[in-house]
Image (tube, rainbow, N blue to C red; front, side):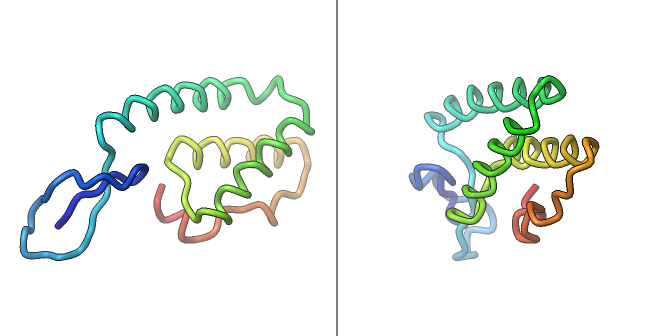
Length: 109
């Protein structure tokens, strides 16, 4: 299998089984550094949801929703944050059913 960076598309090499021609994904060292910092930011944001206004939560959920439907992908930290926002909005009595993740994104996390 050929390994490709899921973010920058750089070829990372091969992995077993070598005869398999499919592509698998990972992250190159350069993208990994940026992802770690972005993950810290998402984690910190998720930890502070309870202090956010309804409008702030809806804005962030809408931003993530647009990313899902424009690119079809979110990395795990974004999926976790999106789910945390929807859970918090549900607790506050809002109906967020139309904002649920598509099945193909649910399967990736």
